[in-house]
Amino acid sequence: MLASFLIIGCSLILLAYWFRYSCVLILRNSEAPSRMAEADPRFAVEQIRQQVFTAPELEPLQILLERDYRLLVYLHDHAAGMGLRSVEDRLLVLDYRILQYWYWVTRTIAPEFARRALAEMSDVLLVFVRRIAPETDLA
Image (spheres, rainbow, N blue to C red):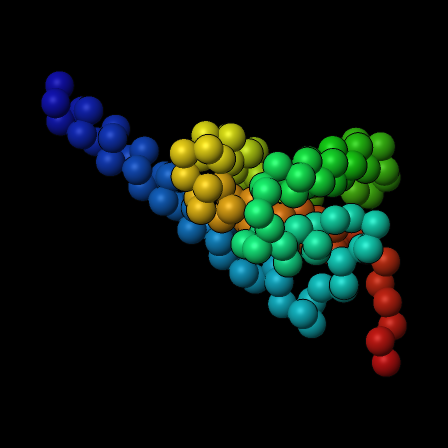
């Protein structure tokens, strides 16, 4: 009986580790400048990324991030060709949702963890914003 709990516990820990590591790798590979267009200025994601570690208040940044998230969800639901095409996209959406809860838990007791959660949430949204941004010819 104890062995079963140990195996289940270790499996859950390894699953969580795999999930976090996969999300970090997806975000790191998605930020290559040669592969991505600049972020759309109509979204506040880039502004949030720049201010997340210097802003005295986190709540306004979280509100802007939530607005962008809702807009992207609306675009996903109503725009043709904006679907979540890959497993990576679905992992990033799940990562964003988990980070929302993590932010909610840590915003008052551990503000530094909340800042990191907001930073990663903005990175996730930035990946999706850059995917819908129109291709620009820089040459």
